[in-house]
Amino acid sequence: MSGSPPVLGSVFPDFEVDTTKGPIKFHEYIEGSWAILFSHPADYTPVCTTELGTVAKYADQFAERGVKLAALSCDDVESHKGWIKDILASQQIEGDDLPYPIIADNNRELAVKLGMLDPAEKDAAGLPMTARAVFVINPEKKLALSLLYPATTGRNFDEILRVVDSLQLTANQKVATPANWTAGKDCMVVPSISDEEATTRFPKGFNKVDVPSGKGYIRLTPDPRA
Ligand code: BEZ
Image (cartoon, rainbow, N blue to C red; front, top):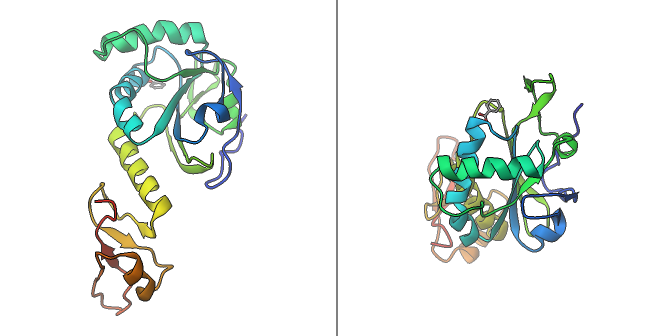
C-alpha cells in the first residue's frame, strides 16, 4: 500500500479535502504562493503535538516569506479540533485555533497518494502510519523540495525556514547555497555560468577558491539579497 512521492519539479497533485478551517481545493488554497504541506502520523501523539505548536509559533516567519501552510494528519476534523486544544495548551500558545488548517486524512487516501507512509511504524490496527513528510511547493505549484522523516524523529523547523530562504533565493538568482548556509552568508556561483557571465550578474564580484586541481569551480559571491 504505497503511492509514488511527487517528483521534484513536477506539478504538485491537486485534491479536495476537509480541514479544520473548512473544505479546501489545494491548488486554490496555495494559488500564487509558496506553500508547505507537512504531514503527521496521527492526532494525540506527543512529537506531533510539539511540531504543530512549533509551526504555530513560526507562522509569522513563514508569512514573511509568503509561505502558506497546511498540515495533514490521519484522523478526522472532529479529532483534529479536539487535539488542537491540547496543542495550544501544552505548547503555551494563545488563542483558540492554529494559524493554519489541518487536513483530515482519516482514510489515508492522501498519505498513500503522496507516498508518505512509514512502513516501520504501525498503528493499533497494524496499518503503516504516515511519516513526517515536508513538501515545499513554489508559486508555479511545482514541488521545490521534499523531506521524509520517520514517525519517531521530529522535524527542525529552523531548517525548514532555512531551506525556504535558499529555495526562494536560488529560484531567482544564478547562485547555490553551501552547507549550513543561512540568509546573508556567501553563496556559490552556479557551475553552469561562465566567469564572464558571473562578472556581469554579480556586481559585488566573486572570489575563486584556489584548489589543488586548479579547476576554479568554487566561486563565492555575497548573498545578492543581503
Ligand atoms: C509522535 O508523534 O509522538 C509519534 C507518532 C508515531 C510514532 C512515534 C511517535
